[in-house]
Image 1 (cartoon, rainbow, N blue to C red):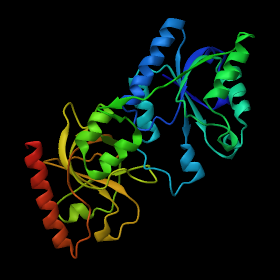
Image 2 (image 1 turned 60 degrees about the vertical axis):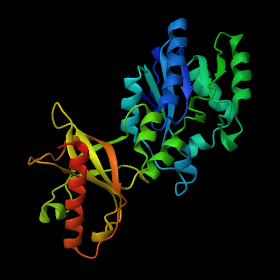
Image 3 (image 1 turned 30 degrees about the vertical axis):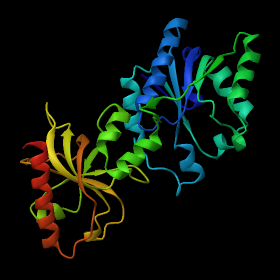
Image 4 (image 1 turned 90 degrees about the vertical axis):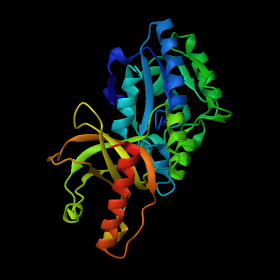
Amino acid sequence: MRLIRGLHNLRHEDRGCVATIGNFDGVHLGHRSVFQRLLSHGRALGRPVTVITFEPQPMEFFAPEAAPARLTRLREKLTALRDNAIDRVMLLEFGPKLAAMEARTFVQRLLIEGLGVRFLLVGDDFRFGRGRAGDFELLRSMGREALGSGSGFEVEDLHTITHGEERISSTRIRDALARGDLEQARHLLGRPYAMEGRVVHGDKRGRAIGFPTANINLHRRVSPVRGVYAVRVRGLGADPWPGVANIGTRPTVGGLSARLEVHLFDFDQRIYGRHLEVELALKLRDEQKFESFDALKEQIRRDAEAARAFLGV
Protein backbone atom coordinates (compact mmCIF):
# COMPACT_ATOMS: atom_id res chain seq x y z
CA MET A 1 0.00 0.00 0.00
CA ARG A 2 1.34 3.42 -0.99
CA LEU A 3 0.88 6.31 1.44
CA ILE A 4 0.68 9.72 -0.28
CA ARG A 5 1.18 12.55 2.22
CA GLY A 6 -0.39 15.55 0.53
CA LEU A 7 -1.02 16.65 -3.06
CA HIS A 8 2.62 17.70 -3.49
CA ASN A 9 3.70 14.05 -3.22
CA LEU A 10 1.47 12.80 -6.04
CA ARG A 11 3.19 10.94 -8.87
CA HIS A 12 1.94 10.57 -12.42
CA GLU A 13 1.19 6.89 -11.77
CA ASP A 14 -1.17 7.86 -8.92
CA ARG A 15 -3.66 9.25 -11.45
CA GLY A 16 -6.60 7.21 -12.67
CA CYS A 17 -8.19 5.48 -9.69
CA VAL A 18 -11.44 4.65 -7.94
CA ALA A 19 -11.77 6.42 -4.60
CA THR A 20 -13.71 7.13 -1.44
CA ILE A 21 -13.39 9.95 1.09
CA GLY A 22 -13.87 9.92 4.86
CA ASN A 23 -12.38 9.66 8.34
CA PHE A 24 -12.81 5.87 8.54
CA ASP A 25 -12.19 5.91 12.29
CA GLY A 26 -12.15 2.35 13.57
CA VAL A 27 -12.22 0.81 10.05
CA HIS A 28 -15.37 -1.05 11.09
CA LEU A 29 -17.64 -3.47 9.21
CA GLY A 30 -19.45 -0.61 7.50
CA HIS A 31 -16.18 0.80 6.19
CA ARG A 32 -15.06 -2.64 5.07
CA SER A 33 -18.30 -3.06 3.11
CA VAL A 34 -17.50 0.24 1.36
CA PHE A 35 -14.00 -0.98 0.52
CA GLN A 36 -15.39 -4.22 -0.96
CA ARG A 37 -17.68 -2.22 -3.26
CA LEU A 38 -14.78 -0.02 -4.24
CA LEU A 39 -12.50 -2.98 -4.90
CA SER A 40 -15.17 -4.48 -7.14
CA HIS A 41 -15.39 -1.27 -9.17
CA GLY A 42 -11.60 -1.05 -9.29
CA ARG A 43 -11.30 -4.55 -10.73
CA ALA A 44 -14.04 -3.84 -13.28
CA LEU A 45 -12.33 -0.65 -14.47
CA GLY A 46 -8.77 -1.94 -14.08
CA ARG A 47 -8.00 0.90 -11.66
CA PRO A 48 -6.29 0.99 -8.25
CA VAL A 49 -8.30 1.76 -5.10
CA THR A 50 -7.52 5.00 -3.26
CA VAL A 51 -8.81 6.03 0.17
CA ILE A 52 -8.74 9.79 0.85
CA THR A 53 -8.59 10.64 4.53
CA PHE A 54 -7.52 13.45 6.86
CA GLU A 55 -5.10 14.05 9.72
CA PRO A 56 -6.14 15.47 12.06
CA GLN A 57 -9.79 14.61 11.57
CA PRO A 58 -11.81 17.75 10.66
CA MET A 59 -13.62 17.97 14.02
CA GLU A 60 -10.26 17.85 15.79
CA PHE A 61 -9.30 20.98 13.87
CA PHE A 62 -12.56 22.93 14.11
CA ALA A 63 -13.58 22.00 17.68
CA PRO A 64 -10.79 20.06 19.42
CA GLU A 65 -12.47 20.09 22.84
CA ALA A 66 -15.70 18.66 21.40
CA ALA A 67 -14.12 16.19 18.97
CA PRO A 68 -15.10 12.55 19.54
CA ALA A 69 -12.63 10.06 21.00
CA ARG A 70 -10.46 8.35 18.43
CA LEU A 71 -11.11 4.64 17.98
CA THR A 72 -7.88 4.29 16.01
CA ARG A 73 -4.74 6.41 15.90
CA LEU A 74 -3.31 7.05 12.44
CA ARG A 75 -0.88 4.13 12.49
CA GLU A 76 -3.67 1.69 13.42
CA LYS A 77 -5.94 3.07 10.71
CA LEU A 78 -3.26 2.72 8.03
CA THR A 79 -2.57 -0.87 9.10
CA ALA A 80 -6.28 -1.71 8.85
CA LEU A 81 -6.55 -0.09 5.41
CA ARG A 82 -3.58 -2.11 4.20
CA ASP A 83 -5.20 -5.27 5.57
CA ASN A 84 -8.32 -4.45 3.51
CA ALA A 85 -6.31 -4.54 0.25
CA ILE A 86 -6.37 -0.76 -0.30
CA ASP A 87 -3.78 0.21 -2.93
CA ARG A 88 -3.20 3.85 -1.96
CA VAL A 89 -4.04 6.24 0.83
CA MET A 90 -4.14 9.97 0.11
CA LEU A 91 -3.51 11.58 3.51
CA LEU A 92 -4.45 15.26 3.60
CA GLU A 93 -3.34 17.54 6.42
CA PHE A 94 -6.49 19.21 7.72
CA GLY A 95 -5.45 22.71 8.70
CA PRO A 96 -6.33 26.32 7.89
CA LYS A 97 -5.39 25.97 4.19
CA LEU A 98 -7.60 22.95 3.51
CA ALA A 99 -10.42 24.29 5.68
CA ALA A 100 -10.48 27.50 3.61
CA MET A 101 -10.43 25.76 0.22
CA GLU A 102 -13.57 26.32 -1.86
CA ALA A 103 -15.56 23.18 -2.60
CA ARG A 104 -15.17 23.44 -6.39
CA THR A 105 -11.42 23.98 -5.98
CA PHE A 106 -11.22 20.85 -3.80
CA VAL A 107 -12.89 18.76 -6.50
CA GLN A 108 -10.85 20.23 -9.34
CA ARG A 109 -7.43 20.10 -7.68
CA LEU A 110 -7.73 16.84 -5.77
CA LEU A 111 -10.17 14.60 -7.62
CA ILE A 112 -9.86 15.73 -11.23
CA GLU A 113 -6.35 17.13 -11.69
CA GLY A 114 -4.60 15.38 -8.82
CA LEU A 115 -5.88 11.82 -8.61
CA GLY A 116 -7.76 11.59 -11.90
CA VAL A 117 -10.61 9.81 -10.14
CA ARG A 118 -12.84 7.70 -12.42
CA PHE A 119 -15.33 6.51 -9.83
CA LEU A 120 -16.11 8.00 -6.41
CA LEU A 121 -18.03 6.44 -3.53
CA VAL A 122 -19.26 8.80 -0.77
CA GLY A 123 -22.20 9.19 1.59
CA ASP A 124 -25.08 11.31 0.30
CA ASP A 125 -24.65 13.47 3.43
CA PHE A 126 -20.94 14.10 2.77
CA ARG A 127 -20.06 17.81 3.04
CA PHE A 128 -16.75 19.43 2.18
CA GLY A 129 -15.05 22.68 1.25
CA ARG A 130 -15.16 26.11 2.85
CA GLY A 131 -18.28 26.50 4.96
CA ARG A 132 -19.22 22.88 4.12
CA ALA A 133 -20.63 24.23 0.85
CA GLY A 134 -19.79 21.12 -1.18
CA ASP A 135 -22.18 18.18 -1.23
CA PHE A 136 -23.10 15.02 -3.12
CA GLU A 137 -24.85 16.94 -5.90
CA LEU A 138 -21.81 19.16 -6.52
CA LEU A 139 -19.60 16.09 -6.80
CA ARG A 140 -22.04 14.51 -9.24
CA SER A 141 -22.38 17.63 -11.41
CA MET A 142 -18.63 18.36 -11.55
CA GLY A 143 -17.87 14.72 -12.26
CA ARG A 144 -20.30 14.74 -15.18
CA GLU A 145 -19.05 18.09 -16.50
CA ALA A 146 -15.50 16.78 -16.69
CA LEU A 147 -16.50 13.55 -18.45
CA GLY A 148 -16.64 15.45 -21.74
CA SER A 149 -12.92 16.18 -21.51
CA GLY A 150 -12.12 12.62 -20.49
CA SER A 151 -11.21 13.53 -16.92
CA GLY A 152 -14.54 13.17 -15.13
CA PHE A 153 -15.93 10.61 -12.75
CA GLU A 154 -19.11 8.88 -11.69
CA VAL A 155 -20.37 9.20 -8.11
CA GLU A 156 -22.37 6.67 -6.13
CA ASP A 157 -23.93 6.79 -2.68
CA LEU A 158 -22.44 4.59 0.04
CA HIS A 159 -25.90 3.64 1.34
CA THR A 160 -26.44 2.72 4.97
CA ILE A 161 -24.73 -0.39 6.35
CA THR A 162 -26.68 -1.92 9.23
CA HIS A 163 -26.16 -4.41 12.06
CA GLY A 164 -29.54 -5.74 13.09
CA GLU A 165 -31.81 -2.76 12.59
CA GLU A 166 -29.21 -0.12 13.49
CA ARG A 167 -26.66 1.67 11.38
CA ILE A 168 -23.04 0.64 11.79
CA SER A 169 -21.10 3.74 12.75
CA SER A 170 -18.04 4.87 14.67
CA THR A 171 -20.40 6.68 17.05
CA ARG A 172 -22.22 3.45 17.92
CA ILE A 173 -18.89 1.75 18.60
CA ARG A 174 -17.76 4.60 20.86
CA ASP A 175 -21.04 4.35 22.76
CA ALA A 176 -20.62 0.57 23.19
CA LEU A 177 -17.05 0.99 24.45
CA ALA A 178 -18.10 3.73 26.86
CA ARG A 179 -20.69 1.32 28.33
CA GLY A 180 -18.07 -1.41 28.61
CA ASP A 181 -19.98 -3.50 26.04
CA LEU A 182 -16.97 -5.02 24.32
CA GLU A 183 -19.09 -7.72 22.67
CA GLN A 184 -21.26 -5.14 20.89
CA ALA A 185 -18.15 -3.23 19.82
CA ARG A 186 -16.66 -6.48 18.47
CA HIS A 187 -19.77 -7.19 16.39
CA LEU A 188 -19.70 -3.71 14.84
CA LEU A 189 -15.94 -3.68 14.26
CA GLY A 190 -15.76 -7.24 12.99
CA ARG A 191 -12.87 -7.86 15.41
CA PRO A 192 -12.09 -7.38 19.12
CA TYR A 193 -11.29 -3.80 20.09
CA ALA A 194 -7.56 -3.25 20.64
CA MET A 195 -5.15 -0.37 21.15
CA GLU A 196 -1.56 -0.27 19.94
CA GLY A 197 1.58 1.55 20.90
CA ARG A 198 5.22 1.40 21.87
CA VAL A 199 6.32 0.59 25.42
CA VAL A 200 7.85 3.63 27.12
CA HIS A 201 9.42 4.28 30.51
CA GLY A 202 6.92 5.05 33.27
CA ASP A 203 7.30 6.19 36.87
CA LYS A 204 8.00 2.62 38.13
CA ARG A 205 5.26 2.85 40.80
CA GLY A 206 3.72 -0.45 39.68
CA ARG A 207 7.00 -2.27 40.20
CA ALA A 208 7.26 -0.78 43.69
CA ILE A 209 3.97 -2.41 44.75
CA GLY A 210 4.63 -5.74 43.07
CA PHE A 211 2.73 -5.17 39.82
CA PRO A 212 5.18 -3.92 37.16
CA THR A 213 3.51 -2.50 34.08
CA ALA A 214 4.28 -1.90 30.43
CA ASN A 215 3.35 1.73 29.78
CA ILE A 216 1.97 2.79 26.40
CA ASN A 217 1.08 6.32 25.34
CA LEU A 218 -2.38 6.48 23.74
CA HIS A 219 -1.60 9.19 21.13
CA ARG A 220 -5.17 10.42 21.39
CA ARG A 221 -6.61 13.64 22.76
CA VAL A 222 -9.47 11.61 24.25
CA SER A 223 -9.54 7.85 24.89
CA PRO A 224 -12.71 5.95 23.89
CA VAL A 225 -12.22 3.60 26.86
CA ARG A 226 -11.37 4.07 30.53
CA GLY A 227 -11.13 1.64 33.39
CA VAL A 228 -9.57 -1.73 34.23
CA TYR A 229 -9.66 -4.61 31.75
CA ALA A 230 -8.61 -8.21 31.30
CA VAL A 231 -6.41 -8.12 28.18
CA ARG A 232 -4.56 -10.21 25.63
CA VAL A 233 -1.30 -8.68 24.39
CA ARG A 234 0.24 -9.38 21.00
CA GLY A 235 3.80 -8.60 20.00
CA LEU A 236 5.63 -10.69 22.62
CA GLY A 237 5.73 -14.03 20.84
CA ALA A 238 3.66 -16.40 18.77
CA ASP A 239 0.69 -16.37 21.15
CA PRO A 240 -1.17 -13.52 22.91
CA TRP A 241 0.05 -12.87 26.46
CA PRO A 242 -2.59 -12.50 29.21
CA GLY A 243 -2.68 -9.54 31.54
CA VAL A 244 -4.68 -6.85 33.28
CA ALA A 245 -4.64 -3.21 32.16
CA ASN A 246 -5.63 0.20 33.43
CA ILE A 247 -6.59 2.92 30.97
CA GLY A 248 -6.93 6.36 32.49
CA THR A 249 -5.22 9.18 34.34
CA ARG A 250 -4.26 7.22 37.51
CA PRO A 251 -6.04 9.52 39.99
CA THR A 252 -4.50 7.84 43.05
CA VAL A 253 -1.06 9.12 42.03
CA GLY A 254 -2.29 12.46 40.67
CA GLY A 255 -1.87 11.62 36.99
CA LEU A 256 -2.95 14.21 34.43
CA SER A 257 -2.81 12.55 31.00
CA ALA A 258 -4.43 9.25 30.08
CA ARG A 259 -2.21 6.27 29.43
CA LEU A 260 -2.44 2.52 29.01
CA GLU A 261 -0.64 0.47 31.69
CA VAL A 262 -0.50 -3.31 31.29
CA HIS A 263 0.55 -5.81 33.94
CA LEU A 264 1.58 -9.00 32.11
CA PHE A 265 1.03 -12.19 34.08
CA ASP A 266 4.11 -14.30 34.89
CA PHE A 267 6.32 -12.12 32.71
CA ASP A 268 9.75 -10.71 33.55
CA GLN A 269 11.47 -9.25 30.49
CA ARG A 270 12.60 -5.76 29.51
CA ILE A 271 10.44 -4.73 26.57
CA TYR A 272 10.99 -0.96 26.30
CA GLY A 273 10.57 0.13 22.70
CA ARG A 274 8.50 -2.90 21.68
CA HIS A 275 5.31 -2.24 19.72
CA LEU A 276 2.36 -4.04 21.32
CA GLU A 277 -1.29 -4.59 20.48
CA VAL A 278 -3.51 -4.77 23.58
CA GLU A 279 -6.86 -6.46 23.00
CA LEU A 280 -9.53 -5.59 25.58
CA ALA A 281 -11.21 -8.86 26.56
CA LEU A 282 -13.42 -7.86 29.53
CA LYS A 283 -14.06 -4.66 31.46
CA LEU A 284 -13.59 -5.35 35.16
CA ARG A 285 -14.41 -1.95 36.66
CA ASP A 286 -14.19 1.82 36.23
CA GLU A 287 -11.05 3.68 37.21
CA GLN A 288 -11.21 5.05 40.76
CA LYS A 289 -9.12 6.95 43.28
CA PHE A 290 -7.89 5.09 46.37
CA GLU A 291 -6.99 6.55 49.74
CA SER A 292 -3.63 4.78 49.94
CA PHE A 293 -1.15 2.70 47.97
CA ASP A 294 -2.05 -0.28 50.13
CA ALA A 295 -5.71 0.02 49.10
CA LEU A 296 -4.64 0.38 45.47
CA LYS A 297 -2.37 -2.66 45.74
CA GLU A 298 -5.17 -4.79 47.20
CA GLN A 299 -7.57 -3.77 44.44
CA ILE A 300 -4.99 -4.52 41.75
CA ARG A 301 -4.53 -7.97 43.31
CA ARG A 302 -8.29 -8.55 43.04
CA ASP A 303 -8.35 -7.25 39.49
CA ALA A 304 -5.51 -9.59 38.53
CA GLU A 305 -7.35 -12.58 40.05
CA ALA A 306 -10.54 -11.68 38.17
CA ALA A 307 -8.63 -11.25 34.92
CA ARG A 308 -6.80 -14.57 35.37
CA ALA A 309 -10.09 -16.33 36.01
CA PHE A 310 -11.70 -14.86 32.90
CA LEU A 311 -8.69 -15.55 30.68
CA GLY A 312 -8.18 -19.04 32.12
CA VAL A 313 -4.58 -18.59 33.28
